Length: 68
Image 1 (cartoon, rainbow, N blue to C red):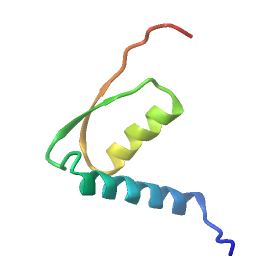
Image 2 (tube, rainbow, N blue to C red; image 1 turned 120 degrees about the vertical axis):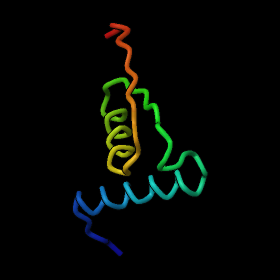
Image 3 (cartoon, helix red, strand yellow; image 1 turned 120 degrees about the horizontal axis):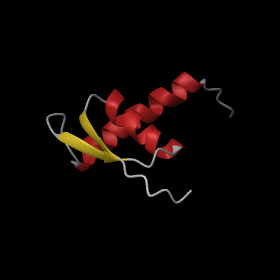
């Protein structure tokens, strides 16, 4: 069976799974401040956005090694 999903539906599902996984695994709580280490790549920016949209208080760490 083929199910058609829009990007916004997929985004909603990903955001929901992200939040549920953090809660079920006890990784952090909404009261915690989370340090998110990023490389400025697409995957890092997606992770940062997931934490932001989930309502966490976040700080961002980035160091440019100038390897590229």
